[in-house]
Image (tube, rainbow, N blue to C red):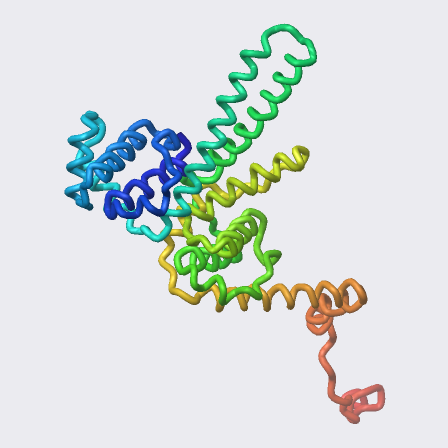
Length: 319
């Protein structure tokens, strides 16, 4: 299972075990929506506990789930880790929607397989229609899964100063979502390729009214890439450095740094634009500026007026 989807499931289950009453925020979610079979069993056991009138939570709920599931892989230690690593209970509604969306794509893939089987080997109009539909549905799922797999992995850290500054802006927005409204003047084109995608995703998630964090932003990137690939298959999607979002969520960054660095990015952009415009309209000016210092160095030093006693009639020649 792609790492992003797996982490979303873990975050959602950890939040539910911590506070099982949050199931009211995801009433549409089914055990079959989980990609990990163990996660599906955990969710089923939790719902069963709630149906039986149990109102326990946290560690006690984890113990009940272990007993009810009876699965060797589902241990109290594992469930406790889920609870400790999932403090973001306010995002549970967004995580539920994300899982349901992934489940929809998985259903499309299964339906595509069924259509391909029923199409058979005959190529009459009906069979050809089934086969075409099967291929289209399968392509939708393939693009979505490909986007999932290319968005969330470990990778090297960039060393370019300009890119580091962009990363700090994005890290502040991911870790302190309240700062998104403070940089509504920030132009997406100030970011380099890839990071521009992340900035767009942050703005979109915030516009939806959903919590901004590394998982919700990563999921928006997945959706955008899959949609763009469907609209224009000839365009290679811009990719970000692997592990970028996970790294942005862990960079130590002070709240508000996005505003300060964003202003610097804007100033640098304006300065570069003005310089480029001046050079474009008056190329000779650029040549003059580039050679000014060299011309000054090559210029001969000024000499004082010659001594009147020197020359062909000077005293040094008369003796």
